[in-house]
Length: 485
Image 1: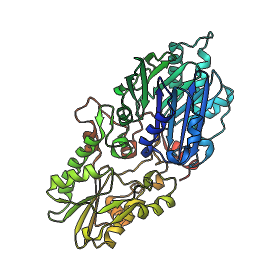
Image 2: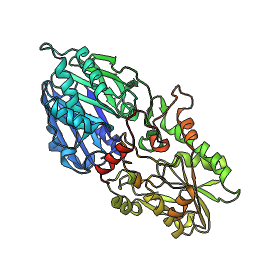
Image 3: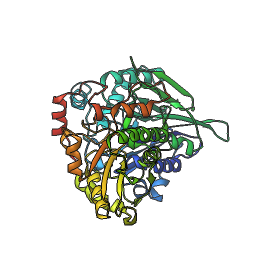
């Protein structure tokens, strides 16, 4: 998971992209980058760290132009903190292309060979984003028949890219002197939303971003989600062109966006993140009531912040008192997206503090959004007991994470996952909890897609079904041999 944004404005775009990357900071804290374009010239600055750390006034002054793209990175492929992995990426031919990407490609091994042997292109990093921009550049080059570059040529290039690339990708590219291109994988796994506003001079200004809150906060009107497999192109005169570029597109968005990744004030694929988390709480309450003895819980507490809506609904449905027993240090990053297990464990107690008066002598039911590696969960259970809790029940608004996620969430290896190959009794024992209760896969699906026409979600980390295909034991073996955490 990363956060991406592209803007095509009348006036200077640098400050607007910076402000919007701040709104997407929750999607990645490893690095940040901005590229702006003034006609044929690119201006770039990218650094490791968060947005505030990456940019100084002198850096912003150099970012000239009215068109630009931005990226905040959460490392899932390539080394965390490695300078060569920081986006945006750039290739100089054809025309010059700057590029940002959210997602993970799953056929990188084959792509790497094809790029070198067939396309005669070289990559300088382990990033699949660099592979993706080189594939795009190759396909655009193959479409060029004259000095002009037409929207149809770009769309044909994206159609060819879809046939070569497997996995998840929401991407935005600046093409020097021509405009801004954005496209989404044929399953719409990672989100991408289009917005527009009218400038004071009466011209259209455009924005594409990972989450709707960015579009609304900037005073744009949300037009729609970019469709799975679709490409949109804003030309040099700010005209919008779009075309479906995939053969058989299907909307199967990532369930984990709604469980944890996205901000609650976003709407993606027509689904309110906040309302879906409320429904998760409603259904989790039913499961808790069926599995736990009546009267075995005194209070319900959330792990801030993403579990709060679900916890409120659990308390309401069960007729229990809702209390805030954990307090969050907002200057510590999200522990789930920190790059290493040791770093995650170290940060839990820096991030959360338990208020003893809320725990002393009580049977506490804790609601978290999910349990992945169990590092945070185990520390939280210990904190609750140290604060005087009588019993600790740990519940998850998501099902057990039993399988690796290969589409852009940092769950690449089976041995990392607490629930892989373990029963709920095993998990309770490892966490030190009296009980552990999970949401069911069916209830999570129903919670997210309710009142929509969406029939399926990308839920591979819960059910082991990989919608793009090509994921088997051999792939897992290769992945585990080539990733570190």
